[in-house]
Image (cartoon, rainbow, N blue to C red; front, side):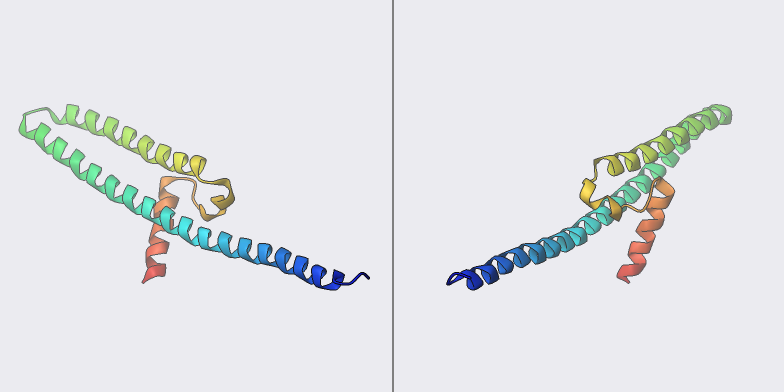
Length: 127
């Protein structure tokens, strides 16, 4: 073996192992960041959903106070509930669709109900 070849091989092995270890550490750190971001997004959506639900209840109270019949209020409520359900499911579908492919395994839900369950698990994990 030529002079210095042994040292060069150790150098190349060091560079190669550095790249592997730093890549693994970077992926781990980004996984933690993305998981945290996902939980914050779900928390924000949950709060938004609760606020929207309260706003709709206020809307129905105002409709009652305005003298609108219970039949019409019931119809509006059914329509609002359908739209609200579609909004929730579409929001979750968009999160899943637009989430980076490398970190999709962090998403362990496919609908609103499962997303809220994951959010509750994350809350218990923090406590």
